[in-house]
Image 1 (cartoon, helix red, strand yellow):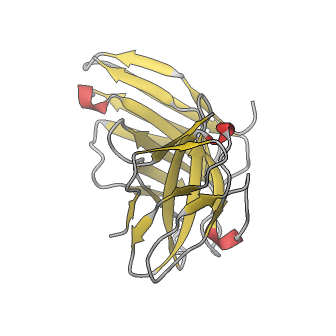
Image 2: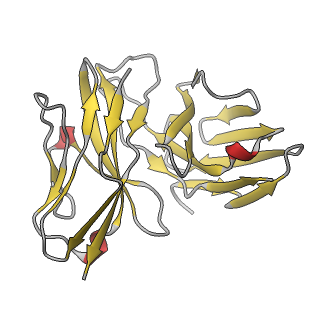
Length: 114
Length: 115
């Protein structure tokens, strides 16, 4: 079965410092990886997905199949980045059965210190 | 409100009560989900309704019963819950495609407390 591990429950960095939120996964096939974010008093929302290879709010994440990792990075942290971050995995190839499941990690709380 | 709407926002119930959580999506999606978010566990998928097919997590107790009358509405019926069922219950929707997973849009959740 697939599993997503976020080793850090809490990560504190100073404003302007680089940020790396770690995510490792275990899955024998080809996964699709996502980062979801939950800001204070807001709903959980998608931040980025590896298949899009995009940068959102200065965050990037590269899928490393050799290390089975999908770490989230930002070169300069901002106070508004403080939030709960969840790494998630879905399975490829798509089952075609009309269902699609995401497996989430436990999340990392990022705190950016002014 | 656009997006995914969940009601009620908060619910306190006794172990013998019967209550229902409601979710409505205004995004035209074809899949809806119930997730459970507990303090010490990752988000747990409970149920999926997708293309009129229900995919059920085998570990969900029968005291949780989902209902999806149409593609826009999803209910979670609760009966004789236990205190350990206290959690944030999140509804989500997505557009399921054969080419791969699509992003989930989440509701704000129902914070459930079982006394």
